[in-house]
Image (cartoon, rainbow, N blue to C red):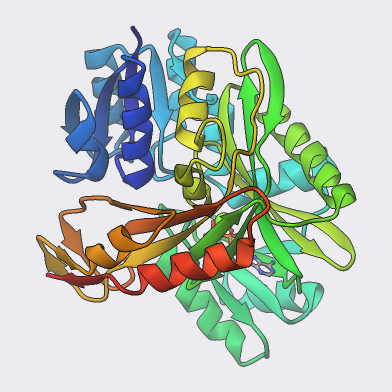
Length: 387
Ligand SMILES: Nc1ncnc2c1ncn2[C@@H]1O[C@H](COP(=O)(O)OP(=O)(O)O)[C@@H](O)[C@H]1O
Ligand SMILES: [Mg+2]
């Protein structure tokens, strides 16, 4: 059985470990703090600062895993190239992890090398150069630190007066030592999707039915599957997802994000791992959920097809204040609702808007997706977290 070193132990990691456990694999869950969600279900856990390359090297040498599986971006991913040279398998690949952790690398690859349609963009390294880039791109535009996730440091510039504060906000929200930002034209999209894409070592690339989602403060609030879209747009999105994942190389699941606007499909970004909006697959919308697909692709089990079994939605359960040892009120409302399930991640502490759990709802294939989504959202709002 394979030994998996899971770098990052959040809620997505926890479901991944459960999928791995069910197929008898061994997982060592790693994070920077004790009692992270995935640690409670893994065989072993380790606490290190994953941005510390030497600590990471020591961990890999100690465990000699068959697979190194990153679950987050904030890792000293440059070291992954060295691990591959030493014969380790990084999921999906060192190249994928490195390109996707820096918005510049992945955007230049997608737009310039692969020719994918993306929002118009430029870069800036100071408030001064941001002013220049904004005049080049036009307003409104979106500013994002090159290294950040969950909307951290991200803001929209609508008028000249926003430029200065967009710069300082980006500097507060940036992870790592890079001060540079990307400036993107604001795409007035009709809707956005995640196209979960599975690449296999010895099999064809598969696509999950498209997932719709709604974002607030840089984090997703509800997601639903499938989301209705023009066949032609879906085809374009699949072609783009295929192009970018084959260029990045490796096996696993990817969350490829697109904006669908009047003038077509824009590639936005991608995660080389399960995607948070893909938690909707925990409603058993598919023959395999996104974590099971990731695991199977990683250990090289063939995946012949991905089928939609029913429609579903997910809605996040958020904390409202800072505290420790949270308790949950109102879970009985979720339990007494039909065609409903939920997960509580087991995070040891809370802070405002921290994601603590998720509600999933579902219905038969010809059910009403907007009703299913509305129900998930309403139920999630009934849970009160005390800490
Ligand atoms: N250029 C843009 N135009 C319109 N909305 C955007 C743009 N860039 C980001 N957004 C919105 O912000 C969300 C988060 O941005 P994203 O680039 O995916 O950052 P993150 O890495 O934090 O997920 C997107 O899902 C989308 O809703
Ligand atoms: Mg995103």
